[in-house]
Length: 471
Image 1 (cartoon, helix red, strand yellow):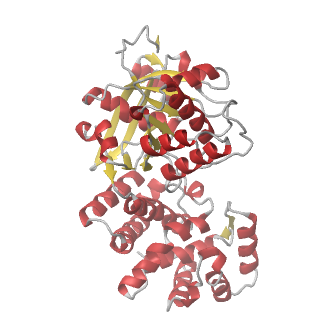
Image 2 (tube, one colour):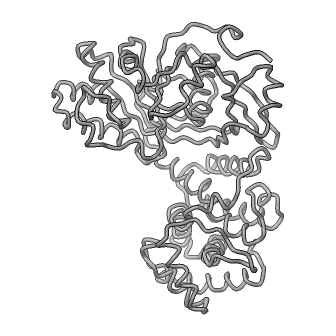
Image 3 (cartoon, helix red, strand yellow):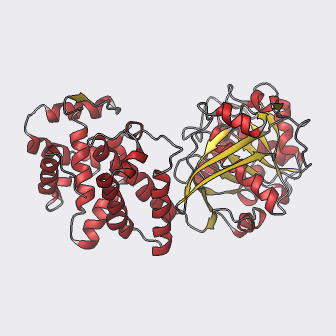
């Protein structure tokens, strides 16, 4: 088996156009895979330089393989099994700024640099007042960005054509706007010049983005077989599903510089990504959350086996098509296609997605992901969505913490768990339901005020206790 490096793989020389903060599985299987596809199918002609955002990371592992690795895609698309492998050859180098700060600073002197991509986790885009000077390597990601931009501004003497386009992939709402806000906060915090601040505002573009791809990561159970098939000793293989979606809220100038349409990639440039975020939260995340308590209390433990189950599979498909999709404001064909994609993703035989892992913090998830569909359906039709109500009843029963003599490993805040423990201690299910539904701290509203909802939850709970599933 051959080693994976530049001696065994011939590489093309390209200018570095992308500086990427984050070397984890997601970016390598998503953004890097997209850019590698761009390089193959379009005239993008740009490589990536990766920066390790935290003191510990995988930079040395990348260097050991000359930044080469494979992405393995397995899943279902349009009813057919898809298995594809791509050798990523578009990462030129990797930097650990904690070890080599000068190399990190020099990265922004690159005249070809145009994009900054990041995934520093949801808590990565934050301000740290302990970062006291532009002269010292900041601990936070936005602080590092500010330091780089200041050096670039100084190095190029404020040239108008040296601003950068930011495509943050952190899973927070308005990730681009928040990154820009904190960068400007650092400018003020460090008392940097007004000219620099104006240069950021006028020449840099901070795009809000939405990303979507399930990336299980390193396939430890099958790595030997994969390496044997590849013929290379690749220790950085990353597995992912075939589905990918990147929605980017950006002006035309960014779209022209990132020609994903020419490569047939699922990258959408839009003026407002809010409808797409709502679509993802309501259909993909909402269906996951609605499925969990119903399927779990039916004895199922994995998403795929739940979709394959005649009763539960029918239940969640109907909930999506009849009670979630109709409440959304996007073209019907787009919504239906996304819903079909979601169902196929749930059926992916290559991903063992445990229901109990999705059940983490289910109350807050239900509030954000499912409740808006439930209330919108009621507002639009004057009726209550019976399947989503059944899921709500199952969720309340799930949080009793036991089912048919077995303990349910609930994973939520101590405050939430204590509340449900007290609510179920009353030994009166109807009283429990009343207390739970009226708790505004859980739902943001008093659900007992929704006409007929409390009565229907009681009815569904009775069906559930009788081992009947609404389908």
